[in-house]
Amino acid sequence: MTQTIHCEDCLDVLLRFPSASINLIYIDPPFIGAEDITNSKPNHIINTESIYDYSEWLLPRIIELHRILKDDGSIYLQCDSSTDAYIKILLDKIFGIENFNSRIIWKRNSLPNNFSEKKYRNNYDSIYIYNKSNNYKFNYQYAEFDTKYIDSAYKYLEPDTGRRFALNDLTSSLKNSRPGLTYEFLGIERNWRISQEQMMRMHEEGRIYQSRPGSIPSLKRYLDEQKGTAIDSIWTDTTIDQPRAKTETYYTSQKPLSLLERIIKTSSDEGDVVLDAFCGSGTTLHAAQLLGRQWIGIDSSKSACQFSAEGLKIFLGLEAGKDFHILPAQSF
Image 1 (cartoon, one colour):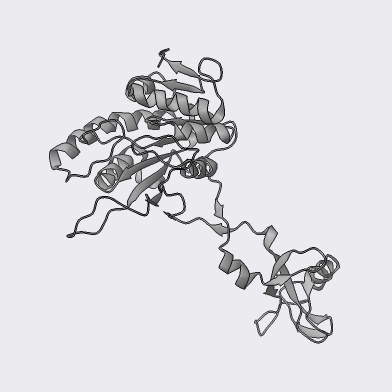
Image 2 (cartoon, rainbow, N blue to C red; image 1 turned 135 degrees about the horizontal axis):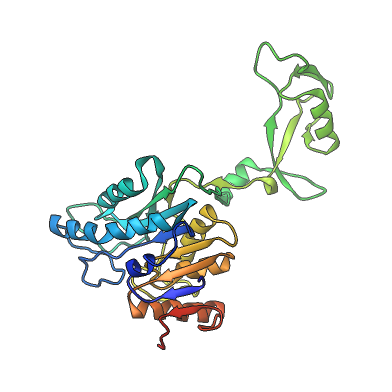
């Protein structure tokens, strides 16, 4: 059943799930050695014993997450620098090195509090992406162009429409042009990149720009037809800064809505099932609901389940027992 929050240990819940039933998994597992076991991050030095215990605790959960993931699905596992190297070994073992997709470096915020005069401030998390197979979903994401880039690159304005555009060179630098690509156009004979037929069609569409008679024509590239800047593996634009946005609840190690929206958009489609096995404040559930996905949240902490349920009610107007369910049934 989707649109459900399970309030118990995720391993117990996952064991009941059918195989190959989930499209996308996001988890930010708690570090068991931390003072607050419910989704806090350790600031102390991690010793060998605690890492061993943590790995032993996490391994069976990753095994079950792999089992329930669909063949075209992906898992995103977020962790800090104290555990990321060890966690990658577990993921390599269960998902296979060949199914490693990417490591995202996610900047937490602008004011890290783990200051030390003897080492650099740690201000990032790693997000490891693994696929179940080579047949995975991936919808590339783009960010809006920087204003300075727009002003410099798209500096031309079409008077009739007000559309911004840049200019692309249509000439070919090849000394020996392919047959049919050397011809005269608007009084200029050159080796062109496109055929005369294509050139005339774009001219009729108003996509050819000639500043004055005798100048070399160029192709208009409209700003409103561009996707934006392709997102790379360093994410600095989804940080948590104070004051928190009104769309966020208060919870230890809470992640911003924009982060989860990017993950869900990238690796799932509308109607797909998204699982967060350590759902905390419910940001993943919130994002999945907004984006038209089915969702399942799991957390062993009663307070986390309460935060999740309250957030869905406050920000999305969803009612427990009607729009989503809490299992086992509880009153907070």
